[in-house]
Length: 226
Image (cartoon, rainbow, N blue to C red):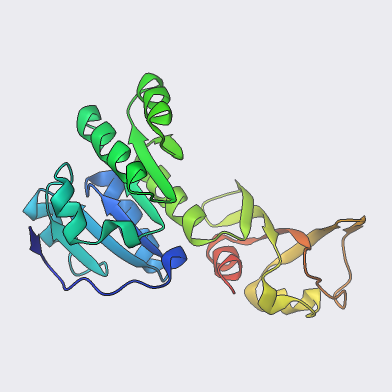
């Protein structure tokens, strides 16, 4: 095992991710998670891939993830979410996924090339299995990084229609507070009522779900607020 950076201690598991496999999908995912402000440990047995990404994510390590001892050395059990991005080798993918679930990793997401492989990985215990490409790496990163974002419909290359929970930091603020992000609130859903086209002074409440439209990056920024 040859680390490109010193692996830091990890306390906030929700905001820290391990990505095993730094091919096109894994590297895209790792870079996007890092750009969204999260701590990312990337792993691959190919030193070239590790060196290529080492300056772009928190930590990158060359190791064989089918070796349980190697995973123990990077303290893999301290991560709340581990993504196994080894789509071109189903046997390795399955072995690693099974080991991670045995170690009690709360959320293991794996990559599959076929629907048959997806079904088998789900039986092994994977929490989520995706059929992937480079774009799905970006989408997964954004979904992992923004738990407040529930659904999104892409309108064009830069704008989306999004359903998101009100971040705690915005509770009590008026809807117009989102204007600085270029975001328009179309509807507020509350447990007991719907507020279509809410006025600018309507205060956002805990538990509100907002149906919004705006620039994709700004929507991600708001969804990432505490």
